[in-house]
Image (cartoon, rainbow, N blue to C red; front, side, top):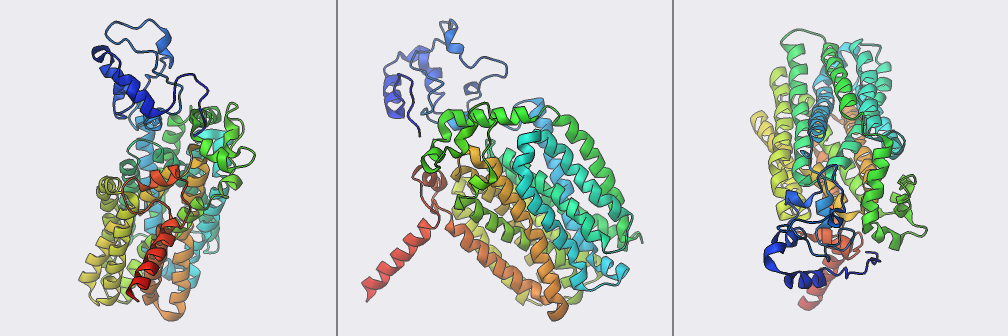
Length: 533
């Protein structure tokens, strides 16, 4: 942390010692400001001057002169600066619309898997060819990863709120018109780009709020809710109502049109100037000092001049943490969408289930994912992200083995439901971990890149499953997903911070490097082995 130029001492211990010598009665309120970040009175009221200490205070709330709002060394200062989802009516409406947006993203992703058998029949195509509907959005996600930061810098959140629904409509309208199959992968590219920029932008925004684990669990629970009802609606329309597969996209066009109108109204004031000012304010608090110590030429610190300079994606990519998180999310999303996309086909071909029952199985998977994100989101932050996710992943590996090896439809439906439950909190926890390990100036670029790049897993791995299944059968789904789960567990252990609560925050303060805990573990095992010899 850069040293403060203000005369009062910035050492928190010295400030606490001085506070104890102040008269108790008039200063009880003041001493709580630095130690209770949840006190609403510690947050400046909107429109009120931050330097209220210059006004004549009342006798009851007289504040001593050593209260220094401008000192970056005050305890819990960053927590006090974080916004809440219900800080104003505008914030509430935006958060609720983000939940709605994630529901639509979930419906879009979840329905594809349920519709694959009917796409195969309608177009008379193979597994490999039909899997292109998974692969083409990957290009859109990659473009979203590259342009997310630029969109924020030049258009603000308003640009994301408009461009995301528009891109999805560009994809859904042709789908509703059931064009020749070669056109489907092309239009799905726009759907991937729209999902990618909204996914990354809203994850970065909510990830910087108070109670981020719980809030991210809610919005990703909304994604799971959409992925639950999407296949159910699509399957019912085809199997129960006798409609063609493309009629589902009539519904999606209408829902995304309403999102476009509502999002535009809610985020109209979230301009590029507002975004740049917010970045400049967060960095002016001194949080970017960690970056200045490592980056020659300033890096993210260059935004203090009114926020006109920006932290480029290239600068952020020099840090290995965004890459670790991106690879973790790539594997996680790949496992999630591979399961959701091929469960119906697996149950039909391998477990010999009835079509409607097979469709219900994927609904159970997404429902488990939804409940897991909401319920486990309240547990993950309390026991620590590193330890919690390690435990969840070990349980997922065990459930995946059971799903693969127990040849029973009922047992498979149960195992895959619990698999979704424990997979649920992985994405939100990865986003929260990134915000704790990286400086604020990196958040939009790093989280945007990781979320969008990770979203590409929804394209690569389901396509790989389809391509291999064409030669080996759909049973290849199980070993592929198992290998992905082992891979992301190893990626997770590479993040610094250990497995104890608060480890991620200490890792940033101590500037621990990626893989430090793994190296410590190897040294410990080597020492134990030498002692036994």
